[in-house]
Image (cartoon, rainbow, N blue to C red; front, side, top):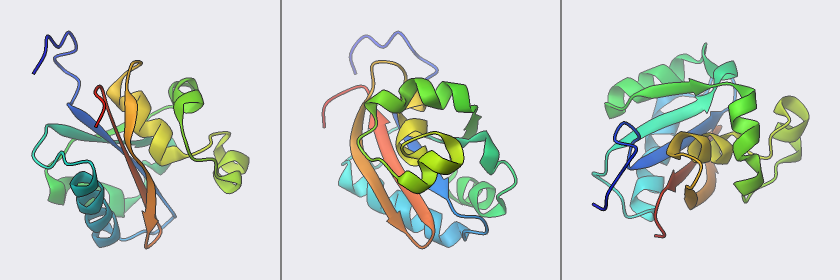
Length: 136
């Protein structure tokens, strides 16, 4: 590991978006797939999402099952990361003013110099993206 000046930041940030009532199983399966795709299984990680998702039990249950911290970010923080997102969902843009909750949450969670390691993947009402501070 190189000289990391953000000791508290996880090695990778997993951004999560989900439809209302999304199951924890769908989120857990998707996070597993994304971590495998990023080849960073076992890296220190955290889950990041929009504060609008605070009342989603599936999200809280998934974080507990995965043993990962779940961080809720406000829309302003997510908007600052949105220029680095790769995916643009018209539906999410209309609802939240963001191109992708999963991607912007991952980028915001991993810090200002982070890059997407895994672009948004979606399945079962959940979406997930991974950002980190190195090229995959």
